Image 1 (cartoon, rainbow, N blue to C red):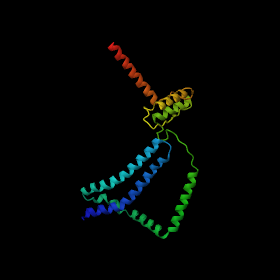
Image 2: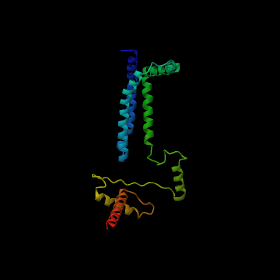
Image 3: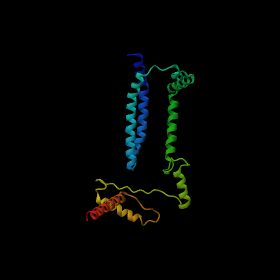
Image 4: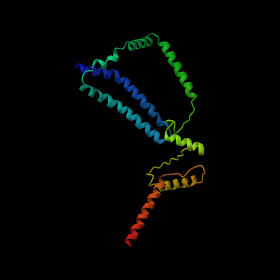
Length: 217
């Protein structure tokens, strides 16, 4: 085994475990969306978790292959490894973990306890524009609505069907009935659903059929 192969083998051995744990914890974080009640969030969590783990396996396979064809690193590329403060920090961490284990465990459990107590004080709240910049057009429009109409908020109703939704006529009738009921609410605007799309397609189909009959006659 050449020098390059030994270097890649050592790098993979050192970095691989840490990278696996990092990707695994990130995938688990996204995987928690599975416990939500929203189907879209569940699907997003599953796909994100799978892709993060797949990215680890791709990177651990592809990156070493790419580096095996590259030249040896220059002095400026490994200059950061010679920083004295880095060795001092690492040596200090080694001393703490070997000679002061009890103190490290005590501080760790104390931090965990404080974190659990802080989590118990959290309250569920959310804003649909939390992630948008303050000067975004959407935020400015919402502020205008807040000033003129005391604000707006989307209202969503989800219907589930075992069959394809446009083939389930009973479900379409139920959706249409719900939409008609929502029209009686003064604080709600006109709703939009797949029923509207089906009605529009039906109108287009009948209109073209009438045109075809008139042309044929």
